[in-house]
Length: 94
Image (cartoon, rainbow, N blue to C red; front, side):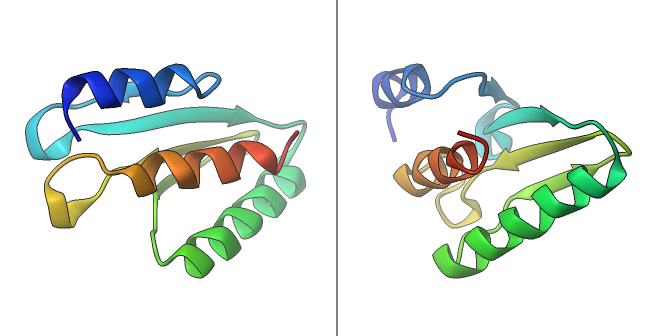
């Protein structure tokens, strides 16, 4: 994806940020929860989406939060799939 497409796609997502650079560029968002049980429930739902889409984010799991980070290793950056999966993850809490 070109820079203009990335900026346009990112503008459609709530709270996601661009991180990294070059082949390590990604989009990421921190999701906050009341407790560990809610966090793990969210992680399991994200895992279900990732498996169904065959597109697996990096997850950083903590007691009351989870950082979700998408990028596409095959293209060395971001793809449309990253943004589609981010939207699906957001929909879990809509």
